[in-house]
Length: 112
Length: 111
Image (cartoon, rainbow over all chains, first blue to last red; front, top):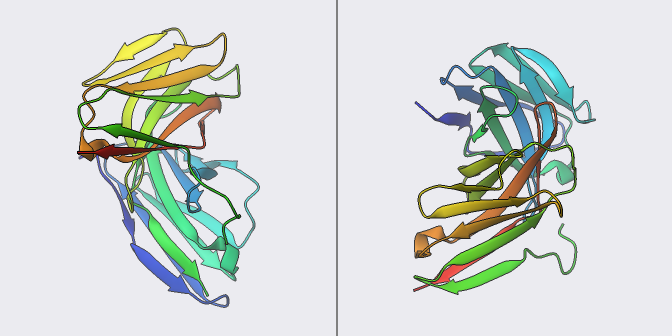
């Protein structure tokens, strides 16, 4: 199984809502990632988890809160987002440093 | 909203032609490079990778060339097919677990 799954596929939320994005992989990968991708732009790294511990936070605002409950799951909790946070949120996983990252299909988030 | 004039570089080819997509990377410390293909509405899909101790690597219909002297990567696609139409990103690894993507090139293949 070389698949990274993400739910939901689409999400529309108001600026006062709290929601969560979910990501799952069953490849035994120990590194998992969150990226944000705006239209016609490349993906930008947000967070990296290595062995279930947060190893990189790319100065992401605190309204985005990642969580890694176990080695297969990665969540991104959203609270008090702004319309400019509307984007495609991609999850990825890899065996570790210097290895290919496998991406999920993304969650298309719209903040109204 | 998007900036006025924001667009992706585009390469238009005919089916059956060979395509060459270029990428300049920024960090001389990067030692691992990947090409990804992203189709509309999907996540990036791995195509081929190369480490800094190599200058060429071949896959099925694809070849990646690395020139460390000028910090340049290229992706060659042989006998391009309509299914190859997508946005192609190069990516470099400037630090531990970090992957930094280039700006992307849209490939349009006409039958």
